Length: 511
Ligand code: KIV
Ligand code: ZN
Image 1 (cartoon, rainbow, N blue to C red):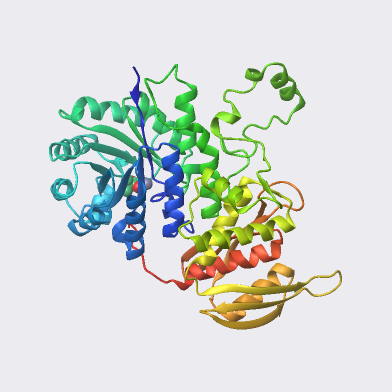
Image 2 (cartoon, rainbow, N blue to C red):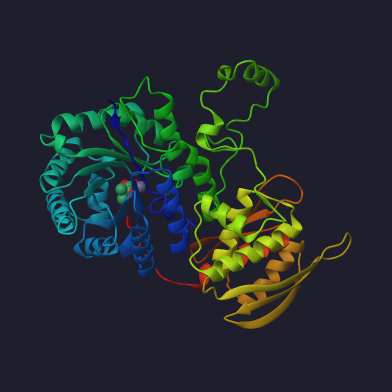
């Protein structure tokens, strides 16, 4: 019998800490449902003390998810822990994850606390969390640069106080795989009550070693890995869930454990997260990159055709790659539409929302005869963002673009229900449209990124546009999809500007 390797997904918390990756409550719930479908064991849904919005998002995930444990992050402060406890009240299975830094540099420069004070605060935090739940996880932040003796002391104390999981973060991605594996081995051997807790790891990818470090820890007895879809996360990201899961599954000859993950849900999860956050997946990314299973070179193709294992160590279909399949078309009815969305795990909450989504689907099917699953996901994302209480909505856009002429755009926006119009010239039609929009919104933001991807193949495909804008250090992403890429661009820009317009301040857990 192999041990279970617990998969703890932190896409909705550490992933969301990537600049621009912030998600709405509805987006978090959609991703959480996909993680549940994938059979993720623990979903870290956010940091409830960050803001009222974050609290509501964690609560919504906790109230919705039934089969995975839902976790909320809290600093080692009584008010944070109470906020997490409140947000998780509705969960079938809830966990509070509390943390405090233990490295000399963090204790001295960030916390301005002595090691004794840190031990005392860590124990208090676990004790407060235990008043809400038995399922408490503790992390010594920056463990990768902490002193071994001190780590042993803190961890022994928090396990004695009732922490059931102790998570060892390489917060700044500094460790080498052999060093990190050794750290786990030493901690497990030296802490007298180490058998009373599950050892977990949480690795960042600053040196590109997050997955290697996590796997080395697993070989040395870690039985929970914290990871994110597509490796999203603070700075260079966290260990990527798909790489961890497939490494362990593919090399069962090496590992004494396996996960419960339904690997066929990996690619759909990857697409959903990149669509919602606007963080594109690089084509050569392992497992979920567009080229991960493409055998371009003639020699490789020949080998794969003769015997697929010559060059393939995994099967594309096992991780959820399916050829673009036409699922619906112009003549599909409401029932077929609803059934396919439900098969994709998409539920809309009212008859009105179903009607609006179906009307959009009919519009799209008029322009694009074959509708794929990817189109349906984009359609629902678009529907969700236009159904919200957004301040700005696109009413109409007209662009003129002709060789030898200056591109021109005329836009009508609804601003809190009141229609306003403007026109502008630009270097190209997108530039003209953005200038016209900005002349109405006056956001004062800078455009940091603009990218277009086709959602499916073919010239009639929908273009999915991602923009990233920055105003005074607040960075947000926006997405929009349409068969007309100038309209998709305007939708994406407005999506981002709407996020900037909601100026809720959020605390960062680690700063
Ligand atoms: O990287 C880190 O140390 C964290 C902790 C909050 C676990 O994200
Ligand atoms: Zn982290």
